[in-house]
Amino acid sequence: MNRRGVRKKLTGVVVSNNMDKTAVVQVSRLKKHNVYKKYVREQKKYMAHDPQNKCQIGDKVRLIETRPMSKRKRWHVMEILETANR
Image 1: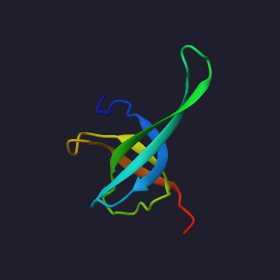
Image 2: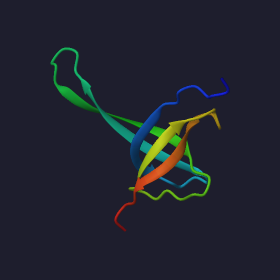
Image 3: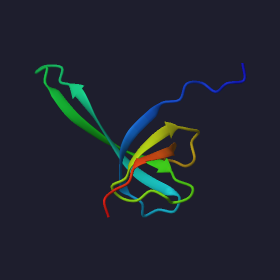
Image 4: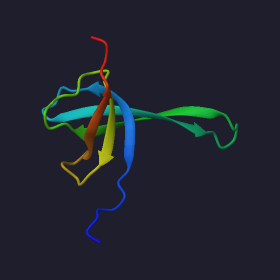
């Protein structure tokens, strides 16, 4: 059994690509409020490794969990799902 464990995948939108080989991706998800039982949009930013600097602001990308690459970077850009209108 030489397989890697099941790795998490996220989908989000690139909000920054100012750093070299790094993209900041904002992932939003719906979460039910404990008291009011309404769905609330929750957003979080992740730093992801982008080795070829292909990501542009506004692109929709899929991230995959990976080993720690730096202090805050634990995700890798798996693929670009759709590009932003430029």
